[in-house]
Image 1: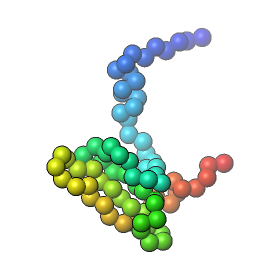
Image 2: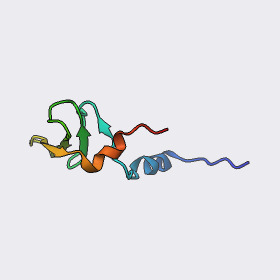
Image 3: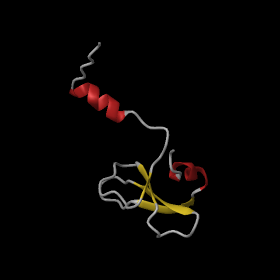
Image 4: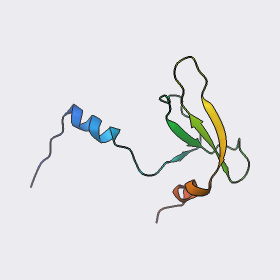
Length: 80
């Protein structure tokens, strides 16, 4: 039996790896890094669209845009 011990830097590396799928949230995140994108479905956009929120650098407002859900629809399905 092998035991793998990861230090704090190893855990940071695991957390920093990007995922291939983008999760769709139900509310806008409070903290968002500059140029980080979050997809939000909170009812503010029309049917078939999702709110794309892009983080901004200090002193600027976040960019919010309604985009078609087309490519993102697969991540809303229930995994069985």
